[in-house]
Amino acid sequence: MRLALLAFLCLCVSAAHAATVTGFDGRVSTPERLPALVDIDSVVLGSGPVPLASGTFGVQLVDGSWLPAESVVAGSKPDHLLVRGPFGALELPLEALAGWGDPPPPAPERGDAILVESGVLAGRVNGLRNGTLTFLSALDPEPLALALDEIRGARLGNPVRRPDGLRLRATTDPGRPGLDLVVAGDGLALAAVPAVRLDSAALGALVLRVEGGRRVYLSDLAPASTREDGMFGVVWPSTRDRALDGGPLRLGGVLRGKGLVVHSAAALSWKLDGGYVRLRAEVGISDSVAPEGDCVAVLRGDGRELWRARVRGGEPIRRLDLDLTGIALLELAVETGERFDIGDHLVLADAQLIRK
Image 1 (cartoon, rainbow, N blue to C red):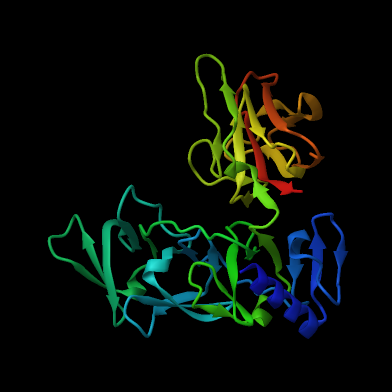
Image 2 (spheres, rainbow, N blue to C red):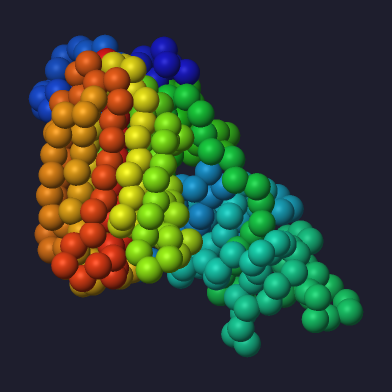
């Protein structure tokens, strides 16, 4: 996959002469030949218009990706949806979908859920044939046969399948998760459905971030130590990739697929063993509680203070970019502010470590 991705990017550079590459050192260039793949942070393949759909309708894939769409209709094969949107008409199997809608209905504890005019029905999708979806509902003794255009949205209980290895992530909507892509021949395909290819020209001027290389998310690393004290006998355990209340993680009005949320008073540490050179993140108070929140965040490396800031809800997001060269132990402390621990949901959004 590493060689395939590099070959594909080289092809785009030689063919389009418009690919713009950003390295982990922050340098932006339009090279005739690409640098080493591990040094590429992101790439833009062209300079055309960004293909974004209007509105918030779309399809959620089982890898967490969000595919903007304009409509869904029955596909040409059983148990397939034909998704029409800015990337053309894509036929996707139901087993690759986590849901669709504007937005999809909330996920049930188990099984599937569909949204119809009368409300949300819980049960199990039993198939899609000739434009009719069969749904087994606990409230009905017989399976329901529903025309697909009667269904406003769906949430499917398919198991999550996160992609491994090198891939490209396109952000099509700041309010939604990114879209993970992999190389398929001389083009790109959906990571959740590698058989479904996209025309690279349709990606326009989207920024494609290289994932699975030198970038490691802090939320994917288990802390070496955790101390969470809270106040008045109430402790909010830290969360990874979701808000403290279990809902989607949002900061600055943007949905964050990756991030760490820590409530005061707390201290966490991670063993890095000198293997990383930078830490990058956006820091603020979670949208779920802002404008509440007033805390002090401190980052230390091997006991030495690297960064300190007072963080308050409703204030501009702080961008963090720290040199971690040679650091063996990274520590984060979140201290209470003037209003004790009220609303102290500190977020390190998109917190990423860059390997040596």
